[in-house]
Length: 245
Image 1: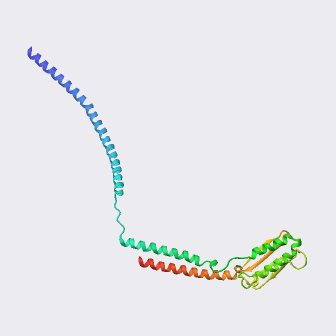
Image 2 (image 1 turned 90 degrees about the vertical axis):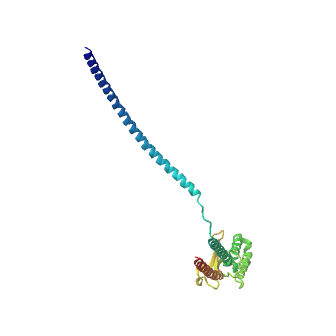
């Protein structure tokens, strides 16, 4: 009886041990699953953390690069470079001053009197003509004086054509006369004479033309001198800069 009891007891213990092992194995399976899930999550976290760490590293590198750019030491300009830059600056300043001086020298007004009395004299004639009546003798005197003064040898802009009211007779007339002097308008180029036209109250047109040959001649000479000077200055400057280079 004792033997059987022991045997049954041992059998029962074996059964119990088997059940315990099954429980342990069943408990171990979900633990392994949870461990694998934990490992996956940890690996994904590590990947994410690696990516974030890489991004942060790039930022750090950019900061380092920007800091290094600020700390860069720029080498000082050499003495040769300073000397050449100073010479170039002085040369350019001298060229500009020469050109400005040449502009003042090459002005037509410096050599020719540009005062023109023809327009103002013609306006005075038209004013007397508009008054009519008793101002006719004054008109005749003003017209003669105007012609004589604008045909003097000392004047540079000589009168060459005049269209005005006929001064003959005893009163104002609507008839207009035309007077011409040498050089004739037909012999002058377009830029060698200038014309002025003034209209009276009754619609009559007073016209005067005067020669500007003296002005055109001086202007052409000055233009030639200016062009020659600019070509000379630019040529010397190009030779100078090429030699320094």
